[in-house]
Length: 93
Image (tube, rainbow, N blue to C red; front, side, top):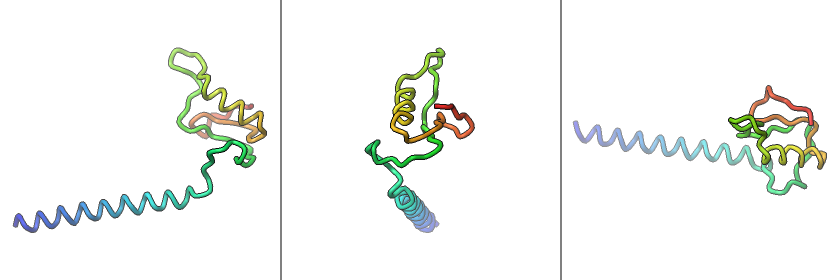
């Protein structure tokens, strides 16, 4: 009985490892050509989404980093509108 449990646990770990590898491979393949490390290579889009950001700090002050990123995209004619972290909050640039 202990041998069956041991084999079952090994099988489950192998299946989970395979699932993790395959999901990572799918994400890598779908993101290929869609990530940019140079701002000049970003194509024009009507709306830009700044993921993982917020417009304000908890005390109400604006976050300068996200404000700078947003203004640089607008100045370089990369986006007309930008949103912070969620698609429903669109701010006119």
